[in-house]
Amino acid sequence: MRSYIMRRLLLLFPVVCGVVTFVFLIIHLIPGDPVEIMLGEQALPADKAALRTALGLDKPVLIQYLHFWFRLLQGDLGSSLYSGRAVLVMILERVPATVELTLGALGVAIAIALPLGIVAAVRRYSLWDHGSMLIALLGVSIPNFWLGPLLIILFSLQLGWLPVAGRGGIAHLILPAITLGTALAAILTRMTRSCLLEVLNKGYIVVARAKGVRESLVVGKHALRNSLIPLITTVGLQLGALLSGSIITETIFAWPGLGRLTIQAIQRRDYPLVQGCVLFIALSYVLVNLLVDLLYAYVDPRIRFTKA
Image (cartoon, rainbow, N blue to C red; front, side):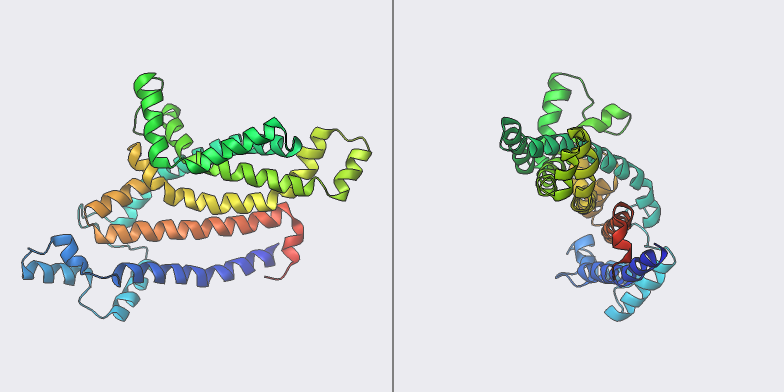
């Protein structure tokens, strides 16, 4: 297990370098002058030159890249142009809210997807199966920016059951978590069904049934556990997507997370903060995929002994 973890950590290094390089290039090499975007075309040349010097944009790109790495290794992502505060501090203040929303959405997705997917696979081609797939199709088709306001109108404005926006107790989390977790629930439902259908035809499942093992144990203990690898892959990839997809949901519900901070930085043309937010989200995606790889080895020990 230790050698497997070391291999994954070694493979993580070039990925992180690639992500950091990509984020740097996409910010610095896009068409247009970021100084003019932040200050406007009518700004005085002296103001533009001062801001360009403060951001280090007057130096060659290679020097900027090396300086960016030097500051990054020290945990310095620069300072916000709008508030003057350290970018890393501002990001870390918003991370707990985003993690809370992401885990809430993941919980909603799993609570919906596993029962529907299992029932759809066990009762294949039945009314339950068709109903589950219809729900999954609706979940994939409905966008967040439409579902969120719809839930607010129904449960907050008309029924008055839940708060409209903001972050507080569990009541504030319900609507954003449902909005963000619906699409993931639809994907997981279809994946659970297809994985279980494939496993339920295996020989060891037939043997377990022939021995008189209860159907609930056959499905829950034997079939579902051997279907976890593709499910974990899907959850891992979608968990990273939840971190970036929360931008829309956090904006709709005024949720004080990293996604809303990114939107505010873009609106204020806060160049260092935008770069820091994008980099943090990208590295979070990489970290989630590393955790998924390690979880593979826990679920299926055979993976530990395969070559990287």
